[in-house]
Image 1 (cartoon, helix red, strand yellow):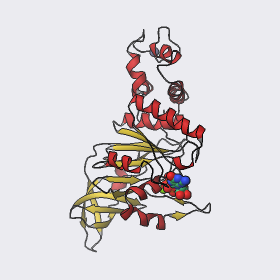
Image 2 (tube, rainbow, N blue to C red):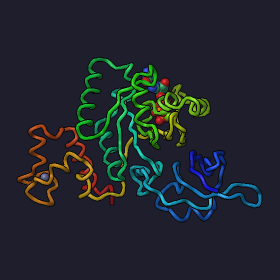
Image 3 (cartoon, protein in one colour):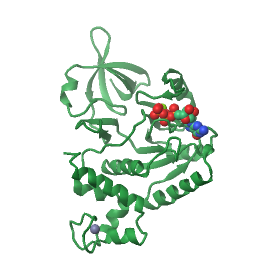
Image 4 (cartoon, rainbow, N blue to C red):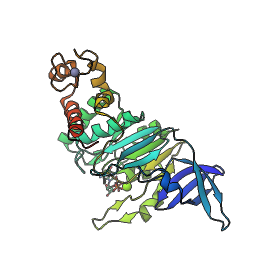
Length: 307
Ligand SMILES: Nc1nc2c(ncn2[C@@H]2O[C@H](COP(=O)(O)OP(=O)(O)OP(=O)(O)O)[C@@H](O)[C@H]2O)c(=O)[nH]1
Ligand SMILES: [Mg+2]
Ligand SMILES: [Zn+2]
């Protein structure tokens, strides 16, 4: 039998079988050995084969090759990769200006990662019902900046419902991964987008002493109108993996475009004479916050974090 993994929790995998039923599966012991460089061998979105053993327990026997996967470093110190999900059409980064505060460099690191895995990305700015005037002007700045680079940017409120139907439309027919800092409202948005299936997760997800529900395992839900949405646990940072120093500028589309005008073909856009990128930052064609993010990622390479 075949199906798609819709939830992983510890050693247990919930699979949506091709016949439409949900099956709790275990994993054959030898599976774990094959991918020691990742913390998790099977992830939400994986297409798998499974069969029942003599004790009527469903066992995953094979994973189909992945079209793509969204990966981050497991932790700052770790060389291990953590695969967030596989076979996704759209990476949705949920942010808020101040509830909690989302830093531009965090947004840019996520976008760089999505570019490196060739996954389209969009930004969803949530909780606009709470925003004061100065925060709304940050929303406008983010929308102008990121849309000009090619990342659609939606301002929404899971609380009031504002902007949700526009967002919903852009997700129909796709498998979308929701990611972002803890508390930005990923699960709340999914409750709005997929009320039938998601509502029950809030009830069973951990209830924190701060009075907050927090997602501890990734889970995929059907989206009304077609497609799937994947809820993931909140992340603090986005440690990049699987790219080289020279790749970084390729994953900033607006920097990459201008870099062909640099005097040296191997320009790092940090100090070189005749650098078209530095010139574009100075005259405002490249946003300084994006350039700062670029430098901060390069800086980590220099410090050897990725070796
Ligand atoms: N005012 C307001 N509050 C919101 C909105 N969306 C979510 N919240 C609140 O923000 C808090 C966190 O929401 P969650 O949906 O649990 O956030 P999350 O991103 O899933 O968090 P993790 O699972 O920890 O990663 C909850 O108290 C929600 O009620 C919104 O649009 N407006
Ligand atoms: Mg959550
Ligand atoms: Zn340059």
